[in-house]
Amino acid sequence: MPRLKTDKLLVSVYALHGDTCSLAPHCKSLGCASGCAPDDYVLSARFAYLQEALDYAEAVSKRGVRVRLISRIVPTASYVSDYPKAVGGRNGQA
Ligand SMILES: [Zn+2]
Image (cartoon, rainbow, N blue to C red):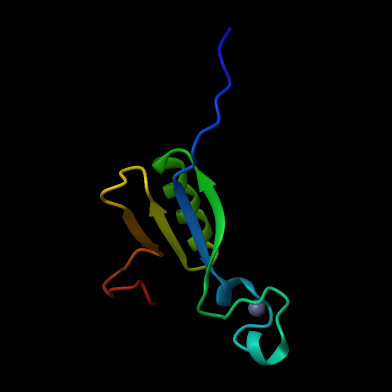
């Protein structure tokens, strides 16, 4: 019998609150229930494998939401990647 094992889900994808909230950029003054500021990155999903997370981050960023992917699979060298990927500019600002 194969065993079902729980993974540590070491790859996290964060979405920029300001790109997902209808109150942004006035979250603070309008009392956004999330308690988040427009420039907060909020945990959106966690993955066991880097490739899944890369695909997810790519898909979310294509819908106009800025995303930060952080992998802690290698504890001594965490991998950070911002989406959308830069096209000419450093942070992908169109
Ligand atoms: Zn908000």
